[in-house]
Length: 233
Image (tube, rainbow, N blue to C red; front, side):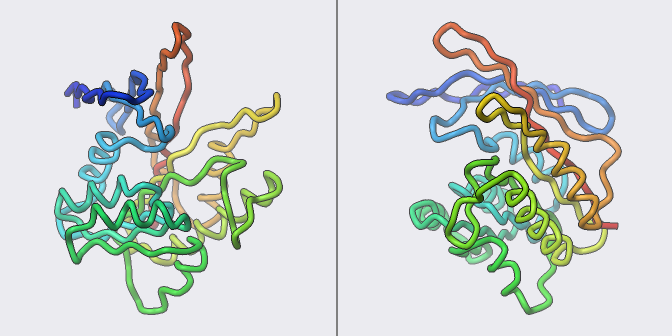
């Protein structure tokens, strides 16, 4: 757990240094140095890999309803897990499919909620790792959510569908952070933890917390990124 991983810095990118501090159930921290992809601050490969290896085993089916650029799919492919990813943006879907070299990795294009509802066959997943878009970046039915309540309402429906698709005893981990928008704080992490509980999940005794220290242009900021760990009992 004390392993330190140095991310390689690519040329001609605006990558910034990041410190992740993961706290596991035994209260032992794992410090990881990574490079943040200039595309955004989504879940990074090295962190996703540690989580997938910790909460699943070889041959398990992993679900990622917000696949993005395919980080979780790539991790599963490399570590002998089966995976289904869902993404609504066509460019991102094409990007993911270029990475897929295994028939055990399935990539679906479309709205996460609609695609989950389409899974009529009794397919059960062994683990779910998702990094939902933050407030202001989530689309449903092709339109951006208008307000915070609508944002939470959509994610609550996602959580309920994921709960139905998971095997009993399986874990669901949701990456999120609180959002500051137009001078207002939206406690997204706390609200999603509440919605996961309402969907039927039992919160894991220890929440995995990821703290990121970012230096850009001489400025240093401390941001907290939460990994909400929940189990279907």
